[in-house]
Length: 547
Image (cartoon, rainbow, N blue to C red):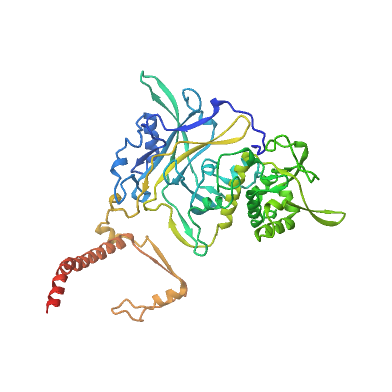
């Protein structure tokens, strides 16, 4: 496990660090490549092209320029699987050392890719899931975008959660698997070089439910991060300073810690039975006060340096649990203006000799930069969980066709360092793209359907689609006579059970063709004279106005 205190894990050798990057066959300023295939054997074709050295960069493929159709032609449109088109993302993984030798695929614990909304390098949006249910696109900060996408795995790696079996439902950014493939490339002098590729299918489907009672904005994470001041939130964010390590100094809290305590009490972090608070409680249990209740303030030589470890006191979690009532009164007094932060030290509530007492404490709170980063992520994730809803709503497609609906693919690889800790390395993003509409006329491909022969109609049995009518409906249907006009002279439901109707596929196909031809002729009859009527309407109106 990765320790969240100031101790750092031992350094790992640079030769064992994986580095996902653009493949050797790409052009300049390209990252992860995209490859399009128009048949369902795309996996076998990609593997054959990779092993035979016939892969090319994204810009060098014909579809990258030809598929710029529709309203927006700034980026190519990726077709949907219903257009019988499939895309594979590919990147190369090498050892982060001189010469970038091929990374051993056996050391890759797992690899995957994510599809993000927005331009690469900007503040992209992630497709987030909560307990397996899609929450839609959410804005990701720079810290969350480069972190482990699986929240459970991220908190286990940090030592904030204990491994569970079975694992909880997935929460975090939706990922898709990538596979390792060993291949070779030829150099300028005919020398072959071993390469390790990561490839995976790019899915272009999915939807999420829109809740009617609580509107959830797309920038949920950004809005939640702006709720708290730095270093516990993103408001007034800046580079880490030494004074940020002391949110409580000499027993008096700053504005940032005051806001944090208010949010923690709103989420009822003192409730140990709430599973959503487990990771947050674990981290708060590692952030400690120093100095214990003293009669004098701590005055170290360096007021913002590391504290005296021998004066370690209670953790923030213990302080909140023991002084919950006093903390609530302290928050209310400051919020109503009856007290100020500068004149109201932190309260401490305890029991001595069976008598409850409340006294201020003169202590410091020490916070490391790593703990502050984790706390920002956990508070934002806790707020997102509080906003999640599980009721039914309107299903909205994941990939839209608006002006801002630009997407890109980012790969990642998980590996294990020499300490046994699982780490993650992100690769370079792909070129931006858009996603086509299911009814895009430029991407509709004809499908050949062979009609049945006439002899198939004569010998065709009713072995196709079967319709099962309940007893109440079967009683009505079987009373109808086959005469014209239909009446009530049918045999009736003699068996008194349900009725199954089997249809012949050839007969149904021929009937559908006949009905389609009739509808086309009717529409032609109607639409054939409609343009003439529209053109003659202004002349008719002008004539009527003159009269």
